[in-house]
Length: 228
Image (cartoon, rainbow, N blue to C red):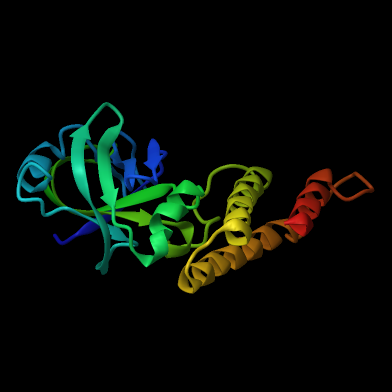
């Protein structure tokens, strides 16, 4: 079947930049994803035992699913009620940029690369009950094949608010951070993507309205956008 990738938006639970330890959820349980799949609790039990830190230690922490860019390794992996919880040792390379991106709140999402070993099809979804896990990756919106707004739930105002919060985080990291030039360039690319998305939301053709003035939402978002 090949390797699949599944994103997870559960928050990072702890960042220790002194020790280079990040505690994160690599995957979550119970939610139906865009592919119609649900990963069940217990799906990682065997693969963690065999391939995790207490086994052959074959599972790696990658950057954006790039096998040529490993950034760390798991030192603990366990399932809880939410998902696959990982204590990851991130290597102090690239001027410590990876750890800084976590500390600055730029990296908040993760994705796993795995194979399906066992699954069961139901009317609601394909329920994945056993996996062979290869890696978990630090990911950003910029690494997604889709733009940030695609698939984002909520009204235009809620979408814009989410994008503005992300842009604010990146702006602070860009102005106050001490990254390598390469990382600064990546931050700049994502900031431009977000600005384009916000602009698209703000400048959409207005719907017919009985009000004489411009909707307050468009004015508020535009003013925030100018400040950032």
